[in-house]
Length: 173
Image (tube, rainbow, N blue to C red; front, top):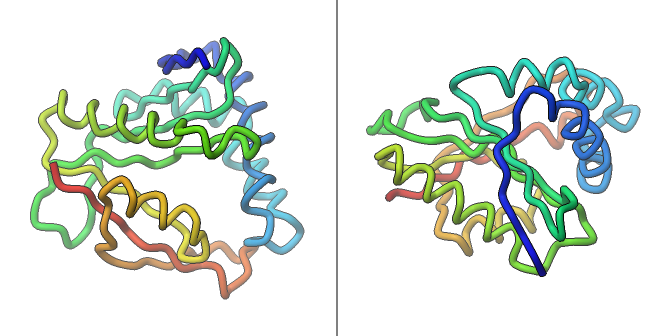
């Protein structure tokens, strides 16, 4: 199994969009009225992703398996976790893998990479948000030493109310 983590450039936005639109429906359609078409069109179009890649506070990475993108990671380098004493954190905003590649240690590889980036940047912690209904994701984050810190609720009217809750999770470095 040959893996590589590759920093994305603006010209990778189309390929990232295609991967996002393959992965998201595998896991999150249950959250939405009308299968989340609005969300996917809003968040995963190439123009939107290109602007995020160009943002100096963000970095996107592909996880390549045998030179094919099977997952991606988005880091926000200088984001703040509300109500947390230290404001020197790195946020893992997105970490996704194709369903058929899960269970091979690839998610851990991406998370280890994120933690290493935080250490290089001399951050005090890494944090993320996870849907409170994503029990497998929560279990994974706990396995890689994240703990629940707080809660928030999304206000997307297109989202089913019972699935709007999110946990913030943190790993101190």
